[in-house]
Amino acid sequence: MQPILNITATQFSLENENGNVSAEGTNGYYNIEVRDNGIGFKQEYADQIFNIFQRLHGKSEYSGTGIGLAMCKKIAQNHQGDIYATGSTEDGAVFNVILPVGQPGVAV
Image (cartoon, rainbow, N blue to C red; front, side, top):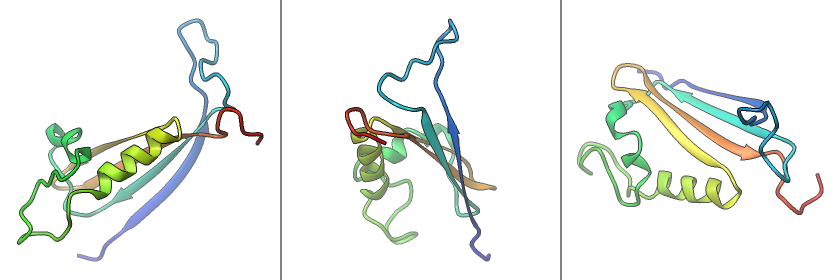
C-alpha cells in the first residue's frame, strides 16, 4: 500500500462554560493534525501508545523501540500542550498535537 500522510493546522482558543478564554498567557492554540493510512491501532489502546517502551506489536512485526510517541507527548507537555490519537486498524491513525501560539512569558 502506498503511504499517505496528510498534515493540517488550525488555530483555536479554549473557552470555559462562561464563554471566557481560559488559556492565560497565550494567544490561543494550534491543533496540528497528522493523518496516515498506516497500520493504525484499536482505539482502546489510544492512551497506552504514549507510554515509554510500550509497543502494540512485536519487534519481528514492526521495527521501533517504543519511545517515539512517549517523547512526542513529553515535548508537547513541556510546551504547555498535549497530544492525543484516534485510530482504527482499517483506516490508519490521526494524531493531534495541541500547542499554544506563544509560550507564557515569551513575546510573540
